[in-house]
Amino acid sequence: MGECAFAPGLYIAHTNIIVGSAKIGNNCKLHGQNCIGSGAKIGNNCELWVGARIIGPAHLADGITVAAGAVVVNSFEEENITIGGVPAKKLH
Image 1 (tube, rainbow, N blue to C red):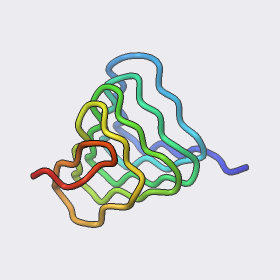
Image 2: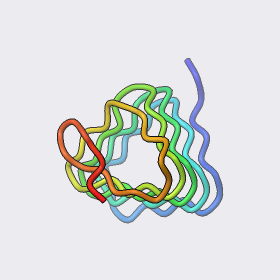
Image 3: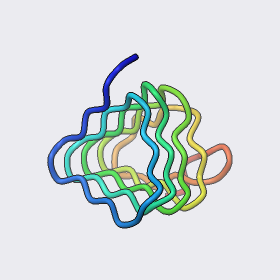
Image 4: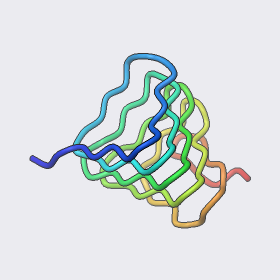
């Protein structure tokens, strides 16, 4: 089983965060009730709003915002976008 890796500047706004063996980049924000699955890789300056889920080994590029309640099952390589929905897709 792998280990979690949290880069400097992680901000956790509320409780109930579950993280598998994932890597979370610099200056990320988790707003509560998030679940980040094993093998996930979250880039720098990403933000996960309340209830967002990252399922499996998805990769998020730098600067991605994940909308509240979104379920991410695929990787998103485009930087500085907003994703949301079930399953998550590019919104903005």
